[in-house]
Amino acid sequence: MNPEALVVIPTYNERENLPVLADRVMNLPVRVDLLIVDDNSPDGTGRLADELAAQKPGMHVLHRPQKSGLGRAYCAGFRWALERSYEFVFEMDGDFSHNPADIPAFLEAMREADLALGTRYRDGIRVINWPLRRLMLSLTAAHYVQWITGMPFTDPTGGYKCFRRRALEAIDLDSVQSNGYSFQIEMTHRVWRQGLRVVEVPIVFTDRFQGASKMSRAIVWEAIGMTWRLLWQNGLRRRPRPRPQADRKPH
Image (cartoon, rainbow, N blue to C red):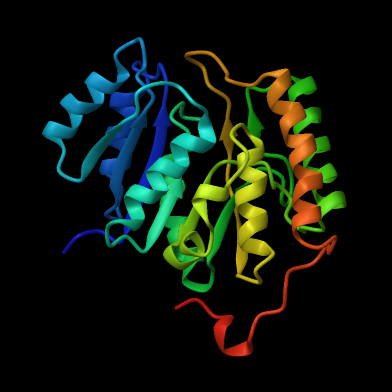
């Protein structure tokens, strides 16, 4: 019986992290498949992923011709998942900032949800290896998104998530506009504003110890502008659209 869950991990120059990360994902106490979406990494991450996939049943690799952003990579992975029979689709970073050991907790939460968000800030702050400036930027961004959009989530910019299949099917992936970290905000908002059930799962976030962060000033400005576009798309409402009672529970 094939696993119901797929973990999608975009990679760009993650050769040092990939072997251990793949081992941890593929050896969890729950069965999941793994999809690496590689953007033609110059360091050979894609070739290494192919070698690992040849040794690990359930590990797959999707090669893209060039680096074109986090959002495009995830959307490619989501389309790949929807073409197959997966019921739950994870997004997770390839730098160990997200702990694969949290995956069972996400799947437990998904019994009553269409989207589970990993949160660093609910009931305290759980962030390791971040300078104070970066932490304050993240907290400020979370409050900004809450204030503009009305989404009540403590960590709307986080990138560790699990989507139920019907949540992804409800999103027109071709119309997703954002590509940097604002992609996380947009995807959550598109699910939430349709009245689908969104829950939060506490996680510990550990910033990368190897490789380089992809954060930039352009990514920050993209997120600021995207937040206002989402409010406009929702008809200036700071609440979800009402759904029929019979359609509110996960299937």
